[in-house]
Length: 103
Image (tube, rainbow, N blue to C red; front, top):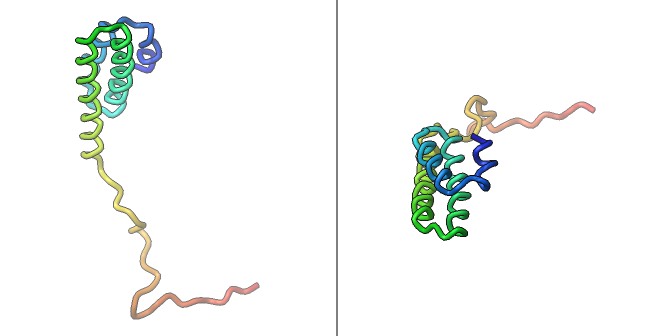
């Protein structure tokens, strides 16, 4: 798919739109990110050439891809924070004791 993004500036707007619509059905992060990038390239190209209908379609698909990326992030397992695998080194009753280091 990276080749598609690389060649997008040379592709016709109609072909970019067709590829973006096909790729949008993918459900992973990488595909959604590629759809977003390709949609933005196509959108700029459609604006320059005056193809207003394609600008609207590509904006919608770009937004769908961004929404899909947000859904993927929302559903991902999040880090719990801290280092729960380490046991505590002190408490209020018994604070950590300082030791003198031998030189």
